[in-house]
Length: 457
Image (cartoon, rainbow, N blue to C red; front, side):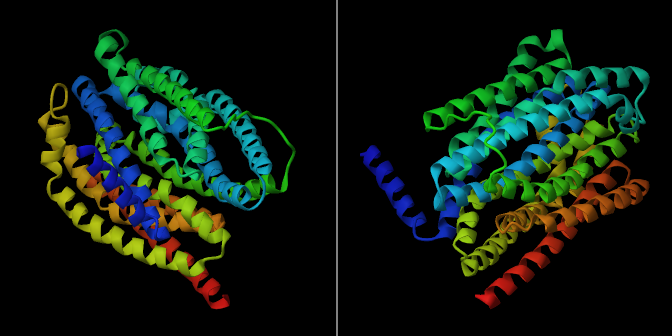
């Protein structure tokens, strides 16, 4: 009887979500959100163990700064390539030939590997120039530890780039569940290393867990692709028209990501100028506010691109306009009350999640203050992600590039001003202001371009 009821529910859900693009996006977003929650439960258990073992000490500061540049490179190169590839790949796959789409994926895979490998070597070779600037508040011992952790972590650049590409291909085929669950491998590997070898490895357990987890994720996604008929190999078929289009879209997308991700680098570096433990305190608060950002942002960015790209390919501008307006209303209706609740309950939330072992009452109060300022970005971040995905599906990446230029400049100025007034909390408040501006900017230009297209058609 129960089996029959489950089958009936699944069938009813499929029938409900198949009637419109908006319902398909909603269904995909629900799937991704559910899987992301499961991943975040494991990730937060890892964070609670880290807080228990390290608190906000110098070791954790060093680890967090060591991860900034590798994460920056992955987001800029791999993330941008993903955004440039998927709309073109879907159009080639659905309207031209399977052979051309496979050649596009192989050529993109090769280009991304070469680019990631070159950038890995480059950031290692130039570390002695930018790390002293990023760690102005660190003493010599803390700086030396940061270098050691950085050298252990850098291979994650190539592995994470491969993960991003593999996940994008599966998401383009509307295979959301496994790609949303695969990130659980990294925090799981870190938890095991911390519990079994934490005393022996110390802070290096986090670095090794990061590498082991990303390797496991690459293997897992490759097996999933292989079982679905993708034998993905890096191979050059020349600069085909499709690959040329990807390259053309990639340049502004990469520039936009470069400038946008620079904000994180700037935040971490300016936090390192403040009192010891400031980087770690900012990180803990970011981890909490990142939960709704990840749940909303990941669900939307993963689910919406394939469907929007299909609508663009068929010039369904009315459908895109309806989807944009409907989902923005829904996003603000959900996120604004949630943000208010998170601000009100910031201190008990931080206390529940982190206050144990080396994490003291004073640290709880500081992190809660940072969290209150950081939480204000939630509605604008998630709404901004949705609007940016509309831009990407319309191949208007140059607009996101310009908003990133303004974001970086505003972030630096506001960081400096708010730090004088609020200290480390000022950096979090600056980030919230940046995402408010970012949403307003991209929404204005998306609305402007859609209005032109609707008038013409």
